[in-house]
Image (tube, rainbow over all chains, first blue to last red; front, top):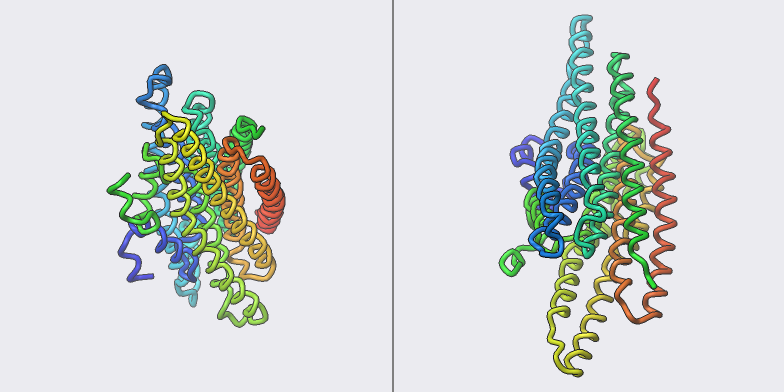
Length: 217
Length: 217
């Protein structure tokens, strides 16, 4: 990964990123994929707002839409950054796993490095979950307030953000399995499960509402 | 969109694609986003297989994994192509909508062009659904047969493919609403709903199985 490491993942072409994801290269993996899918969901949320502003018909929604775009832009940027951070965290875990373990001292140093790396590798997807929830709360506000021509895109945004949440949760969970600090495990799990529950309900609600708005006669 | 049209969407950098998606440019939209999320899901499925082959421990799974990679590669490529096709189909609809409608003849020509464009814009996301189902069926085969270190990635693949299916369905549906050919509407809806039902169940099953394999003690 040394050579390909030099180009940031988010500067790579779509095809290249997807091919790198599919390869046996350890990163990007499921965490980075979740973050990208979240960023796609947020982008769709902004698109809906962008297709609503500047139109006489939705003049009274202009302020809300501009606010949504502003908030979304921030989250979108953060989720794109988390793609990179997830890969970095993964490499730290891999590095710790390769540390020598011949003496007691080496064993302890390795154990500590691994524990810290695993915590970081947990906190990145937890952060992806936090951003995805924020984005879902914003997306909900566009329902019934935005250009109806783009209503399907609200639904696609919702399912992408749900996938980001669930995907990030699995990455939180797989790291928690190996962490020894019981308080860290308990607190992280608690927060993640709460985000997952809220987000799943919210995303399903938005998707179902969009699905029922689109009526085939 | 004329100038940006010259570079294929899938040749753009991740950041650029996401920003273009967020913008008021009519394409890429929800259909292209669904296809990309599907390609990400397929890539994760290949990654799991790639992390399984070449290891003595999983020697008896080698043949299956190579088969999965081969099939996935094909679907991944097709889903990436559908990103482009979705944008093209969208532009045809927009072009038809702009056709003149001053005379009876113009009205009829416009109506026909619009109907054909809408059908194409429906068949692209329907194809995304077909590919996503195929990918989910392949992904299911990796459960219990692949490197357990990558089990979370199977789950992330499943939620991405579900988002692709649901997102594509909303794009099929929003186009069906405006199509006059009742037989086309009926047949397309029937196939899409059947793919959606199978895919949702399959994806949920895979996700839940992964979720329960990862046990925090």
